[in-house]
Length: 179
Image (cartoon, rainbow, N blue to C red; front, top):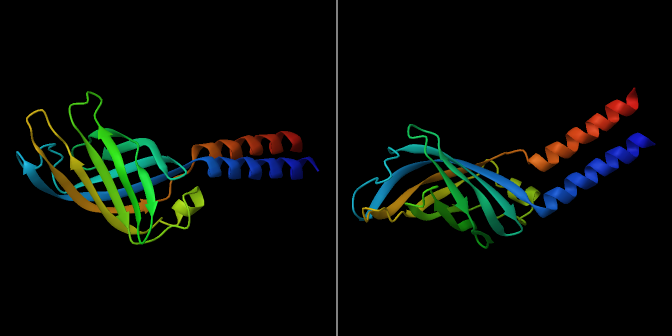
């Protein structure tokens, strides 16, 4: 009986955590830079450059996350804000990018031909393995350079920390009860 109650509580907590917030990760490559003002590749990430972006969401809002260049540069930026729009495509737009010093700024956009059913974790998970396009625009550097990076993006699976914590707690309770 206790095991059934514990299992039900774990399932309920995991589902409620997934309904409130979702985490999604995209890996890709920024392959080109188009200059608007200034010089090519002003951020000096070295094109092509692989990246990983992890976004924390709530409903159709993108709350925060990180953008890490995983190739040679190793630069990491914080991201905040933005929205998930579901229409004929699934678009993640208006994501603000900043460095800790705030010397540069811009926005990230991701677009997928795959349309998700909703913005829950399960809905976002339908993007896993799907490819889309990415752009990193703006970057008004102190030297006045502006432009945009473009490339590709692929959604990848990322475990949700709240669900893992709930599962771990439930397993501890089951183990203690079994003794």
